[in-house]
Image (tube, rainbow, N blue to C red; front, side, top):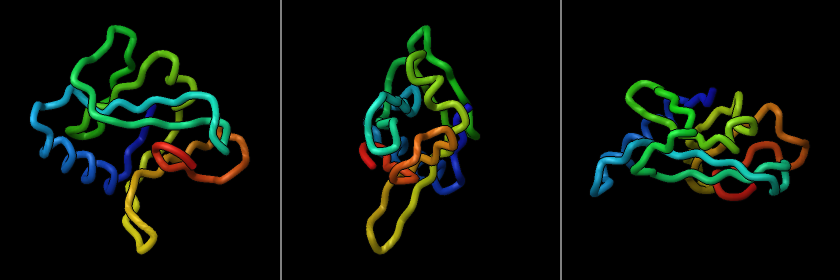
Length: 107
């Protein structure tokens, strides 16, 4: 299961509201690489695939492809807005040691 913090839900909701076409959900993907052993990608998706795991967090639909499911099990997605910048942060308790938390694209 993928968890979203309240800050993440609010940020995702704002992105959904500005999309020209209503998305099917937020796709979160993981692949091997990056400083923590996993590289994350996030974006709007307009189609649910048959092999997707579909999670509902309030009114947000999260889509995870079959290959990413094992790497994303137990992750928490947060949205941080600080002096250093704003962005999504993924906390993965199973990630290898390295940079700690990773932003959605790179660590």
